[in-house]
Image 1 (tube, one colour):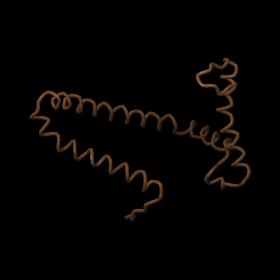
Image 2 (tube, helix red, strand yellow):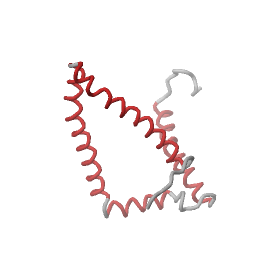
Image 3 (tube, helix red, strand yellow):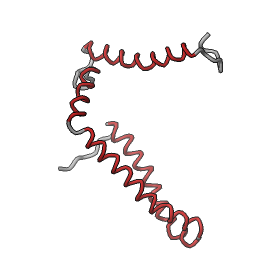
Image 4 (spheres, helix red, strand yellow):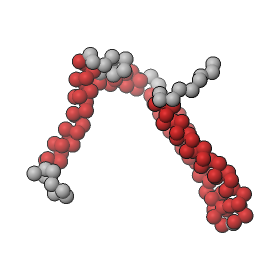
Length: 132
């Protein structure tokens, strides 16, 4: 029986289930997109998506990847260079903690509000006016 708690399965069964877990979503995607139930604008076929990646690969994909990775690495580096010393000072000196605590509290509140806006406004449940 496959669904026994903490019961080992053979390597062949594991491999077959892993392949099935990869192939089934692709097959389902292909069946739904080729059935015409959903517009190709919202759910293009897998082959169309893979072709667009091929075109993208031969045009700007590598440059786009480089720019994105560079931005992430630089942003993390700048944040670490600033946050580690400030965090050490906050943890070492109560005076520094007293100075930075209101700022920390403010950004903590902002973080929760941003999460709210991201979840609800991004989902379309709440619409905000757009200015041009």
